[in-house]
Amino acid sequence: MIVGAGQAGLSVAEKLRAYGFRGAIMLVGDEPYAPYQRPPLSKAYLLGNLERERLKLKAEDWYEKNTIDVRTGVGVGSIDRQRQCVHLADGATLPYDQLVLATGAVARQLPEAMGGSLAGVFTIRSLTDIDRLSPAIEKGGNLLVVGGGYIGLEIAAVARSIGMVVNVVEVADRLLARVACAETAAEVEALHRLQGVTFHLGKSLDRLLGTDRVTAARLADGTTIEADLVVAGVGALPATGLAEAAGLLVDNGVVVDAFGRTSDPCIWAAGDCANFSLPEGALRMESVGNAIDSGDLVARNIMGAHQPYLPKPWFWSDQFDLKLQIAGISRPKDAVVVRKGEGPGRSHWYYRDGRLVAVDGLNAPRDYLIGKRLLAMSVSPDSAQVADAAIALEIFAKPSA
Image 1 (cartoon, one colour):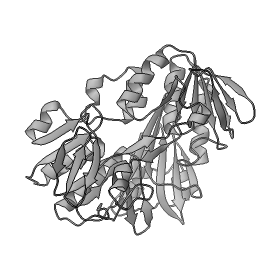
Image 2 (image 1 turned 180 degrees about the horizontal axis):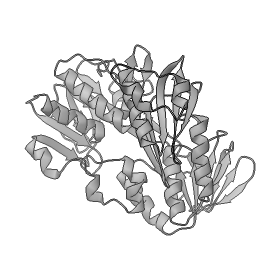
Image 3 (image 1 turned 135 degrees about the vertical axis):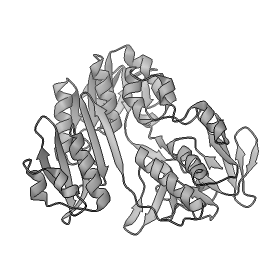
Image 4 (image 1 turned 60 degrees about the vertical axis):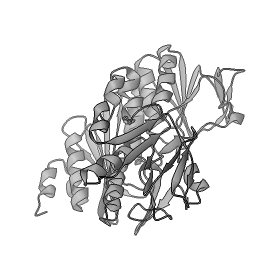
C-alpha cells in the first residue's frame, strides 16, 4: 500500500510493476485527483497555457491496465503497525504487507496573528490552491508575495505578466538565499525589476491589514503596502503527522535509512517527506527528481535489491523569459564560477574543496545538460577552464576526461 498519490507515490507503484511485482498495489490520496504534475501549477497552468487534462501523469486507463487500485479523495487517519493495517478517514480499514509513505509536504501558513486567516491570502502547493488563486489573479490589482524563493518568484512573474502591481517582501538581504548563489539571485532580481516587480529585501512582514479581507500589509519598519491579494511563499514542511502518530522516527521528515526504510522494517518513505540517512549526512529534498528517484529506489528495495540512495538532484524554474535549470546540491559557502554564453545566457558552477557540486543554467540549456552529465560522472573540470567561454564544455564530458 502507498499513502500519497503524488509523483513519489506513483513512481513507487509504476516501478514495482516494472520490476515484476505481482501483488496488489493500492495508491491512496487525500486529494480528489489522480497523480498530476505540480511544477506547472505556478507556471503554465496558472497562466492558462496548460489544460488541466495535460497535468495528469498517467492516462486514466493506465491504472487499470497495470492493476493499480487508486483511491482518491480519502485520507489515511492512522496506521496500526501491530496489525499491519491503515484506517482511512472514511472508516475503512485496509491491510498491508509493505507500506510506503509518500505524503509529501504542506505549505507553511502565515500565522493568524499576522493576518494569515484573512480572505485574499493564499498558499501554493496543490491544484486546488491554484484553482482558488487563478480567478483572484485574473481580476488584477495589487499582489504582495511574502518570500523570495522559487514559488513566490514564479507567482510574481505570472501576476506581473498580466498587469498586476507586484511587491515581494523577503526577510533575507537577497533573493533565493537558501537555494542559489548570489550571482544567480542577482540575475533573477534584475530580470524581475526590469519587468516592474518591486522588492523589499532585508525586511519582514509585521502583519496584514484588513477586517475580513486583506487590504494592505505593514512591514516591521512601518512601511505600508497596498495589497488586494497575498501569496505566502515561505516554504513547506514535510507531512509527518501520520508517521509521528504511528511512533515512527521523525526529524525534519520521516527518517529513513539509505535504502528508504523507516524505523519499522515494513514501512518505507519516499519523496518530499523522506529524510534519508546517508554517509555524508541527512538529506531531505523537495523536487520532482527526488520524488521519481526515491520512489524508484524504494520499489527496487521492496523487491530485494538492497541499493542505497545516490541522489542526483535537478530542478527548474520558469520566470518571464528566463529558464533557470539547476543540477546538484549547493551550499552558501561554495565557490562560484561564472561562465558567460555567446548570447544572453550564462551558467554558474559551484565548487566545494575543488570539486564540482552543482550547476545553475540561466537560459543556458547546453551548459546545464553538460554540467548535469559531469556531476553524474563525478568529473570536476578545472574551474578556470570552465570560466573560459572559448573552451568548449563538451571536452570535459568525454569518457576519457
